[in-house]
Amino acid sequence: MESELKLILDRDVDIVSQKAIEFSHNWIRHQNILGNYQILYATR
Image (tube, rainbow, N blue to C red; front, side, top):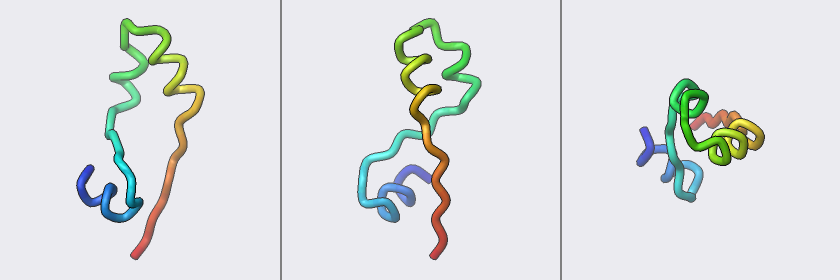
């Protein structure tokens, strides 16, 4: 899925579950990702 999204969006992507971020011990990463994430939809 990451490689397909990379081709569609023409940029690097990371796929991480929301639960993984919510339970992260790194509070800076947690705050930054959950405060700035965007849901993107693409169709062909």
